Figure (cartoon, protein in one colour):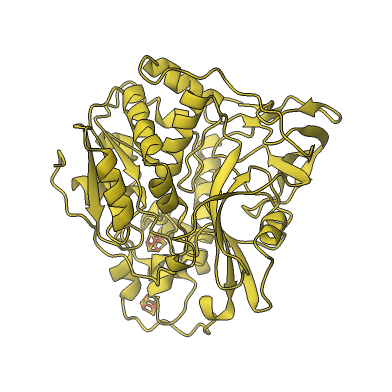
Length: 445
Ligand code: SF4
Ligand code: SF4
């Protein structure tokens, strides 16, 4: 039983075709070392890390190569043994070129680990210190440094932890496979999160399209009195933090506020397992678990890939692109970023690489707005997507700000719902970026 009243869902949302059958029954494979890795210094929200290696230095898998800079930042570790070739500005899966450390990989890896800590006696401070030192970032997409979430301000009382096992983006099966293949580590990871925050209750939220994962977790939770499973309706974007909190607890996170403002911390399945690996095995975050899928790749797979591996190497490992592939996206089809340069690397929070064909993308022509209101009905945050997009187009940024453009989480639900094929989220994202820039300038003026 949950401690909260709940609805198991939220208002609005959509039901895109799931397409998970391409990879949901494929166990993780470990991809071998690539020839080179590219480690962007910014693989997280916050300040880029500062390099502490130079050209010619030898490193092992697990050697610290860039230190955290400031509170909201994260250190970077080499994911292979090898030699530093250079530090230069390189293309990045986020679409913005960033400074990166390039390392030529040796054929085999020597591994450098932290000292493993005892699961039963580890203290909350030791957990936070290890999560910080290991460079763990949120695996749910935003790549927020995890130790920051485990270090809430003193005036915020946290009483509940939710593990996000929804994986509501179509195609992606990374979290599903992790729940099936590493349920014990997930549960121990959740308990470490609860211990680090001094919280007694936790839950794992799973959409009802993953009954096998729910079953296996239930079996492993038999003796855990303080952890529950919440089965949620399958609907996009059920995995968005505010939607997940609403569905699990019935609580609303007010616009502009964070989960911690309502006493809740959310972590992704992959993040909880990375915490377990860092604490119990001493592993820094040097691998990424991801799904490679879509009808445009020869062999879809779930893979464990060394962070920094070029996307092109991953595509080759999966048998290469089919002739009818037209688009490569990093992340899910709803919120992912289309790629123009396949030399960009897999980063710590990369959850998937999708190779899509013409039939899988919406290439219908945009037509004028039908004033049908479907985008407003679908928006889970009660925004007016059609108005926000129009205001962004007209550069009426003050009006857009007043209508809450900065609250938009860029989930793409409105665009999906629009029968006129208007790129609503793209216009809103552009307007939001400009409004945020203006806000920053106002603060620093
Ligand atoms: S992208 Fe923004 S405006 Fe569109 S549905 Fe999502 S939250 Fe609402
Ligand atoms: S869904 Fe599209 S067509 Fe309908 S009101 Fe919104 S923008 Fe206009």
